[in-house]
Image 1 (spheres, rainbow, N blue to C red):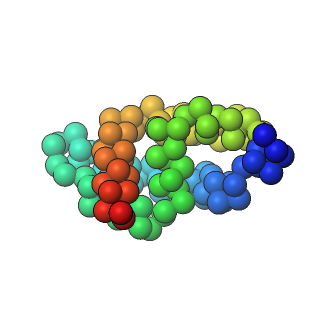
Image 2 (image 1 turned 30 degrees about the vertical axis):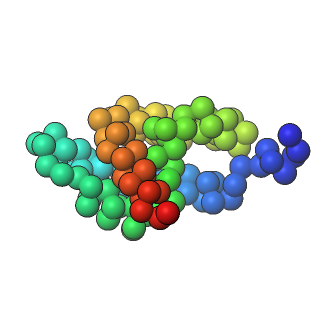
Length: 114
């Protein structure tokens, strides 16, 4: 691999910084989404709305659930602080019930874009 290929994309780093800076709001919004999910309500529109407001953060969240090894590699490469890693782990653990719904939304949008 070349050094260029090993670089962590700036877009990921910006989204990661946004996630950490806005974490209270992100957790609050996902608490509300999870509450609806636990009541059996449809959360697709809520996820779409979150994604439209914070697309970069949504990508980080999707990656946390579905590309965990890649995310860990990026965090290692950028020497992300333990506190920030812990916030990400807490998010992943707390909202793991939503992983499938997030994945389905991403897949649905991929199919629709073809």
